[in-house]
Image (cartoon, rainbow, N blue to C red):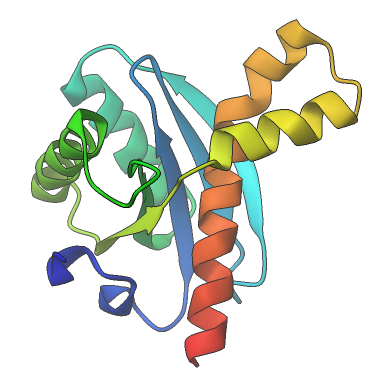
Length: 152
């Protein structure tokens, strides 16, 4: 495991950004300063890395974020495939542009869990497509927040 991107590298307090990195979008969520809850913020339509990173830098600055939790798409057996490798490459590149500690969080089933929740809430398919990424980012961040609280 890469300890450079471990939850323990995050500052003990302050707001965190949560990211759900997809091939076409990046879902973004934000924790409160006390780190009790994660709130979905926005979905960034991916273009080029530089533009994506610039938007994340702006969001981190506006919201005074002190760290980032990035969902790591592991395979169901816990191994890393091409998507996880791509996510790690994105994290390394982002760390060069945005000097905040960054940690990975296992995102297996986050999108499907959020999709099931939206279906259960009878959300229209087009509306689900609009919100699933930022809700998945919130789901990922909330999982990390819960773990951080258990470790304290």
